[in-house]
Image 1 (tube, rainbow, N blue to C red):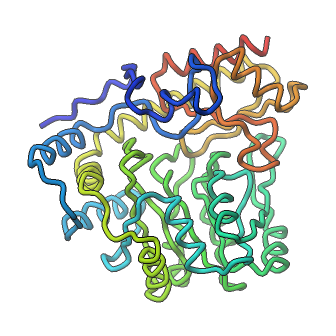
Image 2 (image 1 turned 90 degrees about the vertical axis):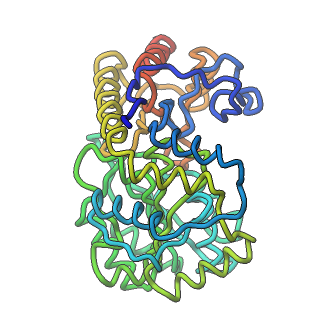
Amino acid sequence: MTERNLDFDQVVNRKNTMCLKYDFAREYGMPEDVLPLWVADMDFKTSSYVEDALANWAEKGIFGYSDTKIPYFHAVRDWMRCHHDFDVKEEWLVKTPGVVFALATAVRAYTNPGDAVMLQRPVYHPFSKVIQNNSRRVVSSDLVYGEDGSYHIDFRDFEEKLVKSGAKLFFLCSPHNPVGRVWTREELLHLGELCIKYGVIVVSDEIHQDFVFKGRHSVFAGLREEYLKLSITCTSPSKTFNLAGMQVSNIFIPDGELRQKFLQQLDVAGISHLGIMELVACEAAYRHGEEWYQAMLSYVRENIEMTRKFVVEKLPGVRMADLEGTYLAWLDFNRMGLDAQELNQRLIHRAKLWLNEGKIFGECGQGFERINVACPRSVLMEALHRIKKVLE
């Protein structure tokens, strides 16, 4: 059997497929003919090994209650070991229907109503939602945006916010969405030492760990033995293999007490087992998807470089943050002299382009737009030319 789905230039028609990105523009208040590059799924067919695994299972015709055994864990373990030099144990693994679900579960497991939870804005907006929707307080140590277009952590501010707020839970986004940082080992160690000092539990969202184009991704929990005792590491094949609709995530909680508290909250939520097709897809992806993954990664890398070049040469006044990881480019329009709302309206109604408006990631995201570059190159070029035209 060979990998069949390696033509990433192929434009797959996702219309009328119940696709959130393409079929719900009107429900989101967008023009029906808008080009959507907002939500973070890819417009590529997944690995043909995943397709075949799902088709073979569907032929059985039975979709009863299911769970995983050792082969599933070995597939997940081997991927983490091979790609991230992180050895996980079977008892650490907790499966959830998505990383955001795991974040919300952690909030309820490790904090009480009214408690503060730390994050670093601009950051993936569901972080704030799961904190606020569970009656906790959001405390942000905003990332610092440099003149060179890159972001860094203000560790003094981070420590001051920890002390002042009394936060005992921190959401780490690594690699960071939307600013594209791949945190260095030194940066993560600095954060880790502060969390140890103040007794803070770290929920590390590492869903984009397989998209690193500069530097090297370090699993936070694997940096020091002490970090295993305070870490919840959130992973999923959903970004890597374009399986977001499958709703399967692999959460690693080494500390027994933290794991038990997390499992209790799963019981409260009524979650016991995931669907069989999610589990089949995950195992097949990690076991057989390497060729597809490497080819896809190379294609996305070229898309990133093409986007960077286009911004520099064709979009004067626009700046693209240095994209070290993820497939989400962070574009800065603040030098254009446009009000952020006016910019967004131009993009939507004149360019007919649906991106993520920067302010949803926090007020420090005003004047930015997030664009998903994991799509066929012809689609990406069309989007970039629309931006150019509307700015002219």
